[in-house]
Figure 1: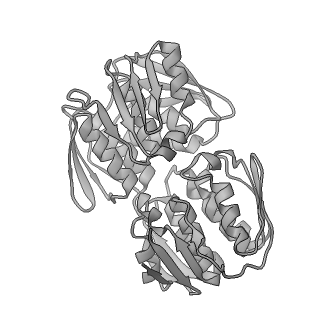
Figure 2: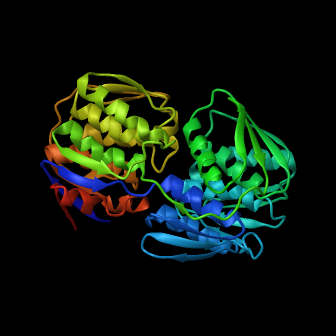
Length: 401
């Protein structure tokens, strides 16, 4: 494992937000589903996006990549299919592709890390059981077999939006109209809106007919050349330095984005001015950076935190464990986290990155103030491989060994 050593620094300058991982997944998959040849521009190649391109190839798609773009030829997509897909540690890849695999009528195994397989998949297990499909989950793979048909489906809105988006992708590959009914409360709606925005870029017809009903018109996509927007989730870690004395201008974000994590621009001023209560049920990926800023500034209370335990690590308890080494004792409950105002000190031992990119980046923000080390810093390769190069160029005194 790699060790990052960070000394107290003032971070300033300008940097571009990396391409959105979430939108990259959607655009690449929709390009394949379009059945033609498309170019997707403004891409980067973190591990999660590489997992998607590997799986698209295994599903019969031709993918040619350059440093910042991909040519997707979907003419043979879902026709010449490998029985094994490698999802690495990517929850998006796994959950987006299971419904597509369930349209094939043959067994397909989706492989991934042990932690990925520990993340909840009961929604698809229930769907397979209700439809009479095959579903078998092991320590490192899920094997499914079925013949998904257009129709009416019901999903809980309290689950990860990845399941809803995944079912949309599966139904888009079929002929005919389908309806997805969402049972409230509808959390992470913004991620479903992001899926609809991506579908519209390919001319597809997926729409809300009311607040909880989605109508999907199968095979409505057409080939288009598209550009991926910047990523609000990772931009938040760069903008966080502005809350602690830095001066960073983050470039490349769309004012019209549907990304739920765009709300960090509303939350950060509140964290600077007081001890706010912030609901992150629609933006759980902001949890670690909000906890970090709360600990550095005035404290905070986060609600809607239930899904933090279902990420690359159990993020609430991971931050609790690491902040304890810095003199801050946060309180983690089932659906809320309280961060007290504290005086942090440099850790006597290296902090752990918990094999979680967002934990590593959140801890890096803290250590830019108090100094210290992070073990397992290579976890940033999952979504932001050049994170440490970017902050070093902004003046952060960081070394990797």
